[in-house]
Image (cartoon, rainbow, N blue to C red; front, top):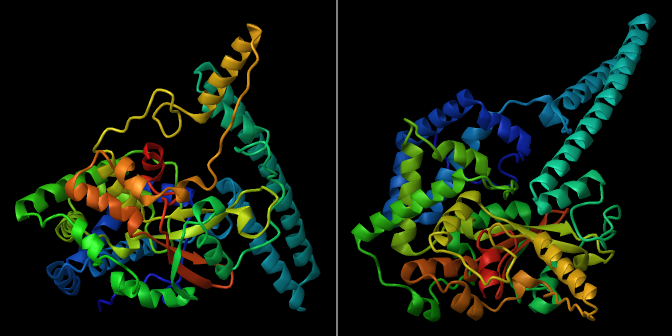
Length: 483
């Protein structure tokens, strides 16, 4: 029986796999083919086809994407088997297996202690086995640590010989366990306070210079209740201004069927190309499928094309209606400690997790135009890095000092940089290479973006920013640099 998806807490259990588990899954060709077959069969079921066709005809992009995303999500989870690596996450698989074995021995030893009929020698035998496992576990961890340090040392030397100074710097910080960040960070001291949702909303309502983004609160409640609102799509949040007079005036003219077909095919091709390239990030919102799974399903040739046709239809709906699925536009805001010895919200930085397929779509469109900055720019420029800029500055200081000249260095830092940018400047300068429907669609990424916050007690809130871009978004860095 086909059921409408609801990928949120309270309806189905949430499983968040680690990167090594996902990499192991996609590396197995048999498993990926089985997943493609399961999804293809599910899409071709009459009830699924009927539901997708109704959403397609009505242009209901949220229902259409909800069906596809839910089907892929749980088809993939159904193919996963519980393993020691899943039960006992560790640095390597061998340690996970030893931890699993130690747990089993402890359980058995506990049951033997409660059973008076068991002989004493059996309990001693279990204790000896448990002791051997503990020794083996300690040796395995020491060996793993030594391998890690030797590998990092080799990578540092290799990076220095290749003059890859950014990699050398990061690897050296990892080697010394000092963290890949500024020196004034105290990575051994975690924040002593955990802000509530109300405190986060209050902080986000502030201006960009004060750490906020001039946000307005749209919804507050329990995280379990969020599943009642999100499937309703854009209409779930009454303050959504997709149909506001100002935005309707900017909306481009409707495209012809021929142009919709052409643009949608280009969007799909660019999105798949973006998925095919390596990416550093892994974390996704709890309602999303990991990027590596989408890559395994959409990149390369396959005889199972039902899912690919659905994604192409999704691209057509986007071009026809100039809107995106709500689950592409809403981010799951995660507070990351700054290790700056401050308290409450000032001790954290919000990183926004977004749907990986949505990020690939925007990345493909963004990269359809050349991105260039001045010759003195280093941030967000290909083949340039902050470490290189620091080296250039130090060389200048050395040469000028050697000539007997006095040097003054001024360092300016933009407080809360990405969320502080005015949208007018972002539209005028950040998106200056785009026109027509491309410009309008990229504009919606920040103007119609929403963010979901939650805390340990499951209290949650949805807010909308009114300035800046979201750290963690694909286009945020380069559009900020342009503006």
